[in-house]
Every structure is written in structure tokens, then in C-alpha cells.
Length: 407
Image (cartoon, rainbow, N blue to C red; front, side, top):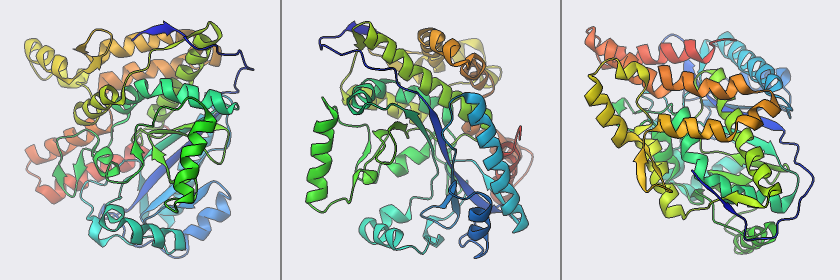
């Protein structure tokens, strides 16, 4: 990780608010069978909207529901919001014999049987995207950070692409797809990549340049507006925010808060560099994509996993599973890269009063992400004599429990 002196004369603007908003997409499962539902009960969405007016919306498939926090100025506010929203959505689902799971894929759902929500915009999306849209039985987490100046949003977006794979590593929750182990920690990313206008953003010199490119697509009739640009990070069209979208949804709420805190502190660290006429060194998407793939494929080796193998074996695996440090030109274990990241943002975590939330990343490294838990639960069930269906059910039961952990 490295910084460089800025070659651009960057004016010192008013410090952004760095407010936080979090969106989460949950999957709805039958509480008894663990299966992903195909059609939602007709009374459920009205119940959600009456209880959480303006903070809950249907998603493309009827088996998904999305929530969004209010604008939060502290991580404590975000915690209270997510706790309230997860609890409320879960309570309504339970009254219909359902449960929510915060996972980016369901372990054995079949996409071909899913029914999309009966709205015109979803019908248009289904028609335009065909099987690509029908495969999108995936859920994510989006974190909005308030950055009021248009050009500053673009400047920080350009510099933040570097860190996106590091955030994905800590969030992975989609190792299974249609009943099979994919060999990836985040299969959601593989499905998501099939859509156009996804992945890493282009590099732009200003908000005006970004808008010119968007307007060209609008004029050509390809998109209606910039909400149809689904990059891993993007300037929001609806709010003065920079929206991080690369993360899988975290099964545990405290993991979600950790990633939101890391992202927020990273942005403020970049702001501090800017005030000192410095900036984060930017790298070609070619290189960042390589780390994105490594995050998607390998994640990290948790401390729990290390205990199950000889030290020489896990040390060798950790070397192969790390991310590339572009300054060194070498693969570096993720544990080392995380410590460097935490050191860079220490001042900002103290400023925001979220030291505990940021340091929780070390806890994630210790016991693993949701992807680790799902793989472990499945393998342990199989080792105990369960068949494939029973092992999948064990994974879903675990996800139901962990989604409500700490609420």
C-alpha cells in the first residue's frame, strides 16, 4: 500500500459529512423446509411497507426483500437502524411461516423456478437481460458515504477502487450455488459479472466527464439514467453519496458494521491525504481486477482453519491465497495487508469513534466469514452421515440463526 504526491492542484474544500447509509438484501426461505420461496404471500409486502414506510422495497425476485437505513452520522446510529430493520423484517416473515437469511446466495435454490416481482421495470429488465436476469438470485450490501461535492466524489471513487477487493474478502457469503460447492468464497460476484455495466468503474477526471459518458448512453436509449450503472462503486444518482457495492451481504450484523466503518474511514483517510496535497496511488483496472478475482476465489484462511492443519501447510496456503501488493509486486497474506490498512485509518477510526467496529475485522479473520461457516456446516453435516439435502438444510438453519445474532 502506498501514497504519492498529488500532481494535480486540488483545492481544499469543505470536509464532507461522511454520513452513512446501509442497504441490505435478504432472501426469504420457508422456515420449515429451508427452501427459498418462489412467490411471496400477497399480504406480506403491504405489511412491510406499513411497518417500515420508505425503508423497505421489493427486489427483482419475490424471494428477496431490501431494506435501507436512514441517514446515519455515527456507527451507533447505523447499528440501531440495522437492528431495528432486521428485527422487523424477520418478525413479518415469521408471521407468514418464513425466515430471512442474510447470505448472497441460497445454498440450493434453482433460479429457473423463481418468479420476478410483477412490476413494469422488472418485466422490462427480465425481457432485456433474458437468462442473465433470471440467474440474478443473489443479494448484496451497499454502503453510502456522504460526499457532497460532485468532483470530490469522482476523485475519491478513482482512488477507492484499490481497496474494494480488501472489503470483499471480509464479506464473503456465497460459496454454494444450486446445491454445489462452487470452490469460490463469493459466487455472487461471478453471477453479477454477467450483467453489463458492472465491475470496476472507469477512471474519470471530473464529475462532468462522468456525466457526459452517462448522457451518451441515455441519448442512445441504452439506459434511462445512471441507476442502471451497477459498478462496484458509483456516485449515487439519488443522493450526494459514493455508494460501495462490491460486498456480499454479511450474515452477522456486526460484520456489516465493520465493513461500513472500514469504508467510511478509508474515504476520510483519502480526504486527509488530499488536504496535504497527496493522494493514493492509482492502479490500472487490470491489476485491481486480479485482486478482485483473488478475493472472490480464495477469501482468506481463517485462524480456525489454520488450527486444522500443520503450520507448514497453512503458511504455504496463505501465501497463495493472499492479495497482490502492487508496490512490492508480490502476493502478500491478507492478514498482513489488513494490519497495514488498519494502521492507515487509525486516526480516522478514532475521529469517528468506531475503533471497535474497525478492529472487529481481526475477529472476522479469527473465526471466518459466512462463507467459511457455510462450508464448515455443510462438511460437518456430511461427515456426520447427512445426505446432500440434509446438509443444505443444516446450512440454511445456521444462516437463519446467525442472521438474527445480536438483535
